[in-house]
Image (cartoon, rainbow, N blue to C red; front, top):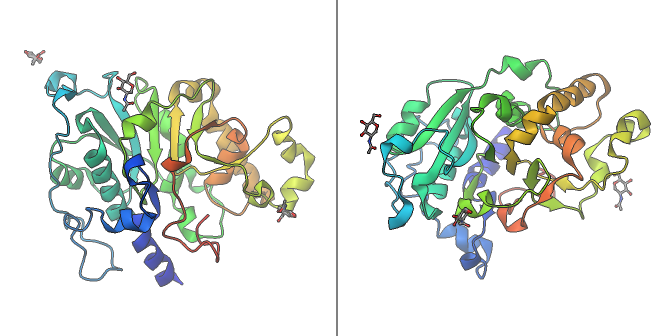
Length: 318
Ligand SMILES: *[C@@H]1O[C@H](CO)[C@@H](O)[C@H](O)[C@H]1NC(C)=O
Ligand SMILES: *[C@@H]1O[C@H](CO)[C@@H](O)[C@H](O)[C@H]1NC(C)=O
Ligand SMILES: *[C@@H]1O[C@H](CO)[C@@H](O)[C@H](O)[C@H]1NC(C)=O
């Protein structure tokens, strides 16, 4: 079983989530994936299923995709520069190839890769050296996310991978990142981006705190247990809302609004309820649905083509 999940992840790394650019839309997704440029710079470890040697990544090109990007002044590279595009992503030894591929794909397809600042969330090892040697000119900062922060809040879920503390780091972006960072794009580490991420960055959130592609045809009921729905004190949280399923793997977050409304605490509160009442089966996603569903700024679906590398029949991809 473990092998299957790993195997499934192995493909996922390259194809689970593809952000389709208009120019690629005329091709079937598999075509776009196969022509990806991942292989030449990601040297696969001897065994596909072993944890990769942290130093097995070849140095990536420095991407200079347009002349007028104007980020050559080293004095304006600080994280507080208002022209930066902020991207947060986890770096986990187990999923390292995915994260590195994601970063590479973002740089390659951005008009101004110089303007992108990466916020890496880690729970172990010194991965900063690896990032620096792979992407020599990358603007980034590494944040330590203490697993102890969520260990007592995590309850068992249908998939062991969902119980990894780092999965929950997205709940804490507003606390972890510098207060001057007002907006961030959060990305899972199992995706590649094939369009300019600045377009996603520029998406209007209106009055909303988070933006994500919504899937209103999905049966929302099944994301929570019968116990949840039969307890009106709990399920009443959705009263007056039109909740739709959304995926937390690609999100645009207004950190100013998040901080102001204390959403981290609200998410933690639902995780505490889950510990005692078992109101859902999945990992870090349901608390986001509980807090935000029905109040999400809908983002174009082309920004999250999910399910490509998984097994939707057996429900391995949710
Ligand atoms: C960068 O800042 C330093 C110190 O503040 C200054 O001496 C230098 O001239 C600045 N460089 C540019 C290109 O503005
Ligand atoms: C994003 O918005 C900025 C500021 O409004 C604008 O200069 C830039 O061209 C936009 N970029 C894209 C790719 O839409
Ligand atoms: C949604 O799922 C619930 C629980 O599995 C089920 O009872 C209900 O019939 C489903 N609704 C639709 C419209 O399929």
